Image 1 (tube, rainbow, N blue to C red):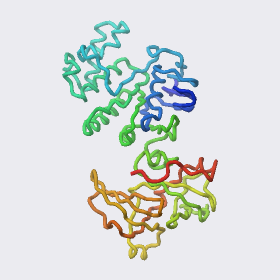
Image 2 (tube, rainbow, N blue to C red; image 1 turned 30 degrees about the vertical axis):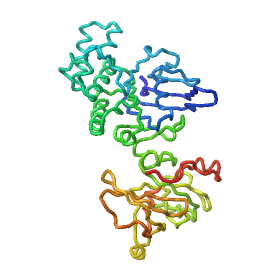
Image 3 (tube, helix red, strand yellow; image 1 turned 90 degrees about the vertical axis):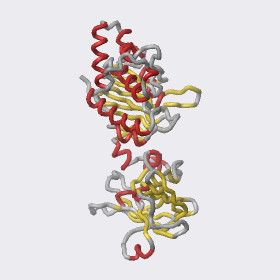
Image 4 (cartoon, rainbow, N blue to C red; image 1 turned 60 degrees about the horizontal axis):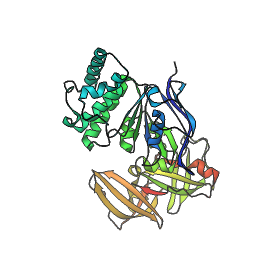
Length: 386
């Protein structure tokens, strides 16, 4: 038996001539894996999900479920189920009838339907709610019913289209943990859609970051957050500063901590390139990302006693929200950088001149393929996102 539940091969889709919604995407999901498609509205997440479910046909490419090509099969011929954001429950049916509806269509014996409904209600912690109508349930309870209805058919793959989007923040976070626990207990492959970066990181085994109909990067939450490959991934997942410069010194390959010195408009910094297979050479233009929480601010007197590489900056803004202080710093006429800390204050003031620094290992080179293809090309994802 295949260890792969779902495989997408070179899926292309366009709804209008010259407008590609999906640009030949490929994706593999192993059995019992929680895979999240993460991206902003209009990037192609829902179209991808609908193609997997059979609700849309790709212009080209193939969909495989458990090793079988199902591209041309109707939705009811695929062993997948979908949970939608609006739950799509039948308002005139009670909870038990909603959950058992799919089994009834399959002409499953009534006794077996009742038993399966009972078991799945226990699993989603809704025992005793069998006779209630959807209008008598809370948002979280309706969401559990929708999940139970999808799971009772024991699908090979469960598709979830932003199922927590209609819930308030506290309930959404609680349901994230419940949903992840349920997925691990059942061992079913989940393909989950969200635009919420925190949700994706908290729940997923694998994240596929989508942008304009293609996958910018596919990896574990750690890889996506700490080792982004592109400036888009760095800024979309978390808060990252995107900086540009020129390599001033080639790395010392004999050193265990390989760093390069990068010259920017406001100073020189060190960037660790230990994980780079093809280190950049002297004189090469590079782009690198540093997360706002890894930016350290120093005054001139502090810099004099430390041998660290720094960038000169001016504090232009200080704001506090959600337990986090956000400081905007101007490092050149065209470039701002954001530093963030948990707490209500930081020992800097608006208008003050400071120095910012970061550890070499907290910076990561991005957009290498783009730069290697055309060193003169300027990334469209520059600037800050915080």
